[in-house]
Image (cartoon, rainbow, N blue to C red; front, side):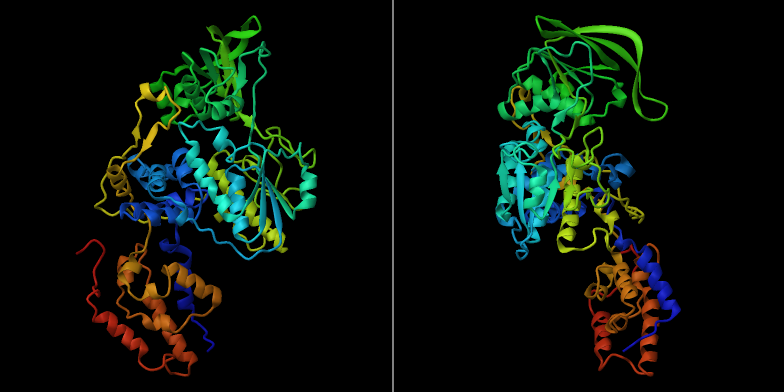
Length: 595
């Protein structure tokens, strides 16, 4: 039956489809580059459903235990409790709690599509390369990862100290690649052992996901002596040996970010007697996370803020001190990094200097691809495609700065590769906004009974003990604090109408979805509007007071008109539905907040 729906129906439907709050993701989920359903797994943790919580996390990402430890958790910055009370939910800690408590191989989804016969080479096994490999393998493509190092994980493994991310956790979660049948070739350096041009000839597509493994050091007088290294090389040594050949007793770390903190704290564990961190910024402007700053200070790291190394002093071919100038400003009037130094000078003694002042991606393409001065490849920002057909980029090489962003770029590149292999346009019908972090438009007011509840923190190993070992120092949440922390979630979703109406749940997840499909198709099953009993309960609880009953009543009239004055529903099916609801114990008409 062809039905011509009236303007009133279409007007109401359009308003609901465009503005229904039920379509809006929680702030945390929208901000997460991988769009992990944090609210969903936090609810499951609160209910004690730990297996389900792990599975909910793994719907989006394969590293729950890893990210629960090292993620920069942008989700927490937009948490509504952060905005309202200044203390977000401990989302990352709860993710780790679920993983530590329940994650095991039996819960892993190891299904994948039928073999396509297509092959993909991925350079690098960091979070971007691994995520791309998983997504493409699950579509049925044959995937081979080429990894220069003898271990998997990229900078997760050799750039983050074991006291923050135990190798056993990373190795366990990377076992998922093997379970899916991803081929891994360790100890192969692309660009040296095999050329990218050769990979492109052998494989149907190539993804470059090699991380930023080259430490950057500014040009400073006297730096060509022993005892001076960069953070990348130092942390890689620590990862493999838990000690460094360059490390002495009096160490200076130059830099103010989290990597600098990792170097300083690792140097203490590696045997240094004194570690001092020197940075351009004032204490209040330090880019490192507050947690890392406080942890380093508690362990005995000394801080010198607002100074810039200007010259190195040396004795018998080894660094013996530094000469510094005071830094008046780090950023210039245009907002660019352009330190302005003063005339004050100061000298400090040391026998080791570690530069934690940035890192870049190596050029392994042998001139095939264009790179920026920072080593990132020039790619299409939406598709991550390069100028060379079939070659794509992800992770640090495409501009990510944190692990969760790298994984999102890995997924984005996998989507592009999949389209390329199928001969589908890389941009055709693709919603790029949903492939990145975005701002949720959720705007439902907080219930009046919400109160401020203090955030619960993980247990931490005492500072005097943790500097003696590379064992994990963050011991995680215990059962009691995890339950309390999960109970702080405000559950930022709008589904009251779905709770109050027994009928809507038979047809949709929310009114916005129902009317979006209706408008896209230009039609709707007659049983839907005829299932509404016009109680207006949905309108009573809707924060925007949308009148679904009016839309459904209009649809009924349009159906009758199209059916020559007769109901399109045979028999008394609709009446039976009405009566089943009206005489059920669940049928009540009330306003939200009233018992």
